[in-house]
Length: 423
Ligand SMILES: Nc1ncnc2c1ncn2[C@@H]1O[C@H](COP(=O)(O)OP(=O)(O)OP(=O)(O)O)[C@@H](O)[C@H]1O
Ligand SMILES: [Mg+2]
Image (cartoon, rainbow, N blue to C red; front, top):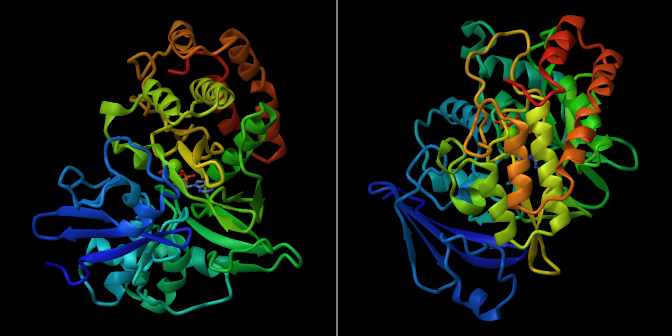
C-alpha cells in the first residue's frame, strides 16, 4: 500500500467522507462519514448517477482505473489536474527528485486549492508566494512544455516551477492556464485563489504562450466569447490580458464563496475521451435527470447549435459542467466555457469528427439531425435558434478584424463557419 492511502474529503465545512486507494490492486474506496449522512444536509451534492450511494458502507471501485479517472470515483477525479496540470505536476515532482506520487498524494497537494468546493486533508504544505510575474511564468512554462531548447529545460529547478505548480495545476484541460485573483479596489493581482473573498475577482487565465501571430488562439476564443454573449448564452465575464491572454471569471468562485461544481464526466463517470457515452442526447438526458430548468435546456440547445455552426468540435463531456445550488440542494447548468474554433484554421485536418455525437453522427450533421434533438427534448422554435445563431457570422468576422486577427486566419474560419455544414 502507498503511504498516504486514505484522505479526508470536505465540502462546505463538513467532513463528508474518506477516500482510499490500494495502489497495488488499483481499487479505490469511499465511505461517507456517518455523522454527515445522519445530519441529512446537502443530500444532492453527488446526484444518484449510479456511482456513489448514500450509505455508511464502504463502497469499492475498480472500474475507474484509466487515464481519465486515475482509479478514483469521477466526482473526485474532477479535482485532479488534467493534461496541462499533469505535465507541470510531473515536472515539479521530478525537479524534487521524486519519481512517482500516488493519486491520493496528488489530492493532498490539491488540498484546498482545487477547482470547485471539494477539499482534501491532510494537506501537503507548499511555500506561500504573494507576487506574480506573468512574463517569468510564461518563460518557465515554455521550457516545461518543450517549446524551447532542451538545454534550458535542464536548468529548471523546483523554485521556478513551484509558482506555476501552485497556480497552474488545479484547472483542468489541455491548454496552459493559471489561476489569479484581482483585488477589486486597486487592481493588484495575486497568484492563485487562496484569498477568496468578495474583495477579489478570481480569474482562470488561458495563456497565449506560442506567439504565433497568425493563430492567436486566446484572442479567437475572446471573439467567440463576445459572440456567445450577444446570443444570450451565459458565459462568465471575460477579458484579454496584455491583449493576448484569455482571462475568464471563475464560476466556481462567486460572491466570495466556493461553488461546488462537477463536469458532466465527473457527475456520471462517462469518460470524455471515450465516444461510448459522448453524445448530446446523453447531456440532455442528464439535464432531465438533474431537473435542470427547461430554459437552461433551451440554452444547451443553443450552445449545441452554436458549436455545430461555428466549428467548436471539441465540445466534449468535460467542456460541460453543472453548479450546485446550496440553498435549494439542486443543480444548474454552468455558464458555457471553452467555446472556440477548435482546430488550427491554417492547417488542413482530415478528421473533423465531433467529440459529442448528434443523432449518432459525428460528421456531416444536417438540419434534420438538429431538429430531431429539438423534437426529442421538446425544444421550441429550433429553426429560429438556427437562424439567430447563423446571423452572428458577419459580426464575428468584424470582431476578428477589430482584434487584429490576420486576414488569412479570418478568411479560413469564414469559409468554414456560418452554415450548417461545417465538415
Ligand atoms: N470560467 C470558468 N470558471 C470555472 N472553471 C472553469 C472556467 N472555465 C473553464 N473552467 C474549468 O477549467 C477546465 C479547463 O478550462 P478549458 O476547458 O477552457 O481549457 P482547455 O485547456 O482549453 O480545455 P480542453 O482540454 O478541453 O481544450 C474546464 O474543463 C472547466 O472545468
Ligand atoms: Mg476544455
